[in-house]
Length: 356
Ligand SMILES: NC(=O)c1ccc[n+]([C@@H]2O[C@H](COP(=O)([O-])OP(=O)(O)OC[C@H]3O[C@@H](n4cnc5c(N)ncnc54)[C@H](O)[C@@H]3O)[C@@H](O)[C@H]2O)c1
Image 1 (cartoon, helix red, strand yellow):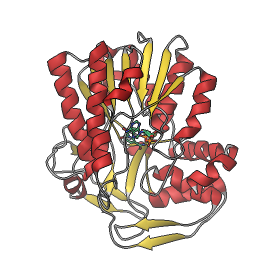
Image 2: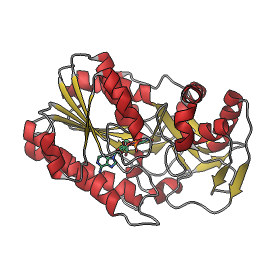
Image 3: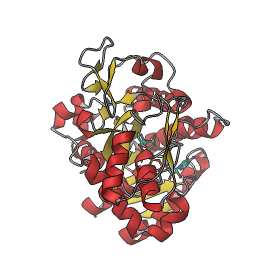
Image 4: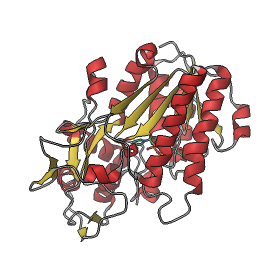
């Protein structure tokens, strides 16, 4: 890996902190700098972990251009900061979301341009519009909605949603700020010769995700089973049949590592990176795994009405990236739940107030 000075924006969050620590572990000669405003509750727990790994933490806000002035020269910027909730801005002001997820990305791009550094953007499957996804053909099985073999929209198949799925339609303010950022990144690649990659990820999960009701559903589900409390199946009949694919954060690192070690091959491209149909679960199936792993059953309520911006199912078709690299996720749902449960139990005191 040729990069020696790496900045991870939003680097104290779940994705950023795990990637920063894994980069440092695998490439100890790299200087890794983490830049974060600690907006996400629990991100502060990353700071001692950075200290013992030899990573420099810099407190700052990507919305403020002047906060970038204290940052060192870099050759790679990994943009992991965001307001990552799909519900953000729906029942409250969208200003923070827009200024971080869009304005902040532009500040990050300008900083990358200053040093001609490479730029990797963690985007989201939420760039794909909601109504066309919900209008695909699904079969209601006993525990989940399954995509049918035959679909009538380009980019949709039994493998899931591919990069050429049409982009017309509303996608949530979260998804739209990420898509707008993608478009501007492409202009920086084209106009300024920025070296860059855009990774549209489905659900990512694993230890150190501070799961809450509106973001981080895997950890929320496991945490409730560990600490007690109740959960709700919301919408689509209230039976928990909605499906998501997921990747464990270690599988995301494996994909990123392939990209960073051969950046020219991936430069300028957009990739879907997700678990695919093999790594997918419905909420009902996730409950059953959590019960097996934790040995505990908790009350689960049923809410009939759909939640805004919710999807019946999202399965990422990552064939483009898989064909180029042979990458595939190695960590399945059961292993992921075990890993999250172990992490919660090992850090129970610290996490109790954040995850409960
Ligand atoms: N977790 C997922 O399932 C998932 C899926 C697809 C894409 N993503 C993307 O991955 C990236 C990381 O998400 P995450 O799950 O780690 O979320 P997270 O909330 O755990 O991490 C985001 C970090 O950004 C920081 N941050 C927020 N606003 C900031 C600002 N204005 N300036 C500086 N730092 C700021 C937060 O404090 C937090 O530490 C996001 O871009 C998100 O869109 C996440």
